[in-house]
Amino acid sequence: MVGGGAVRPVGVSRVAAIDCGTNSIRLLVADVPATGAHADLLRRMEVVRLGEGVDATGRLAPQAIERTRRVLVEYADAARDLGAEAVRMVATSATRDAANRGEFEEMVRAVLGQLPDVVAGTEEAALSFLGATTSLDAAAASHGITPPRPPFLVVDIGGGSTEFVLGDADGVRAARSVDIGCVRMTERHLHGDPPSGEEVRRAEDDIRAALTQVVADVPVSEAASLVGLAGSVTTVAALALELPAYDPVAIHGSRIEADAVRQVTAYLLAATRERRATMPVMHPGRVDVIGAGALVLRVIMEEFAFEEVAVSEHDILDGIALRLARG
Image 1: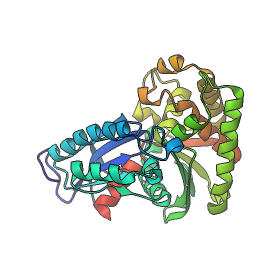
Image 2 (image 1 turned 30 degrees about the vertical axis):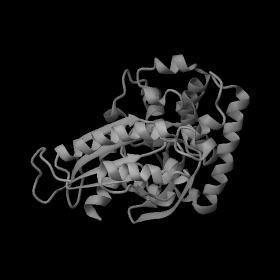
Image 3 (image 1 turned 90 degrees about the horizontal axis):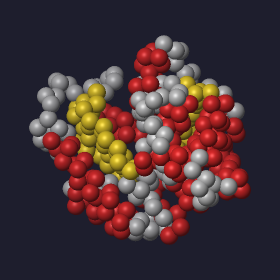
Image 4 (image 1 turned 45 degrees about the horizontal axis):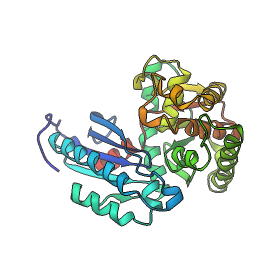
């Protein structure tokens, strides 16, 4: 994919990464040097709810595929205009689960000229780990705090699934993906406005059951630090930090204590949809599912006895770009 755009520095690869999850689709166009930090040219995120109803029906809804197509056309145009040399689109939980996945893949081929990579949960986790951990030291320095200590347990709370990956500077040691994303938990359990105590308890039980699968594959006790990724975690952080508006710079690299996560989760689960929609840090597309996302984070911290979470604005999207440019 070649086009115009800003002048690309010598020795730098300009790539476009697209992450299509259960709840949102995101674009990153970046200049990636052979080593060191990458430079963003463009980041975008739209909530398309591709996984709408997939947990119940096993199929991607036609209207959800169309919502995704419209945004993907815009992303393809933006990447071309900026002169991206290569593009990679990764599709995750909702697409893996869908019986009509082929319809989605053909739509993507028609727009991008290539199929999406429908990755397994373990690869999804590895890409998230790569994206998150490359900037941890710089993020800590910007806040004037010590970096989180490796080994890291990187947790990416998505719409359909949550990825767990344990690793350090030498790479990934173990990974597991389980189906406890914020959209899936909301559709399964949290139906009230606000949800009832019994609905929340059922969701908690579902999350804890999934975590027993995680510890069977990932030696969680080896982790020195928990690193949390994606919109549920960053929104909880924004609320815990009492930000007047969503601020990625303030959020990236922040450390949120377990007590603060508990308080924010209780607040979100007790709030009506109308109240959540008025919160200044809340993206409109997260209003319906943020309670479940916060609950997933809270239960993870309780079950695995983490006293704080290091929050990263960099995640699988950055990992896709880094892997595309550097191999």
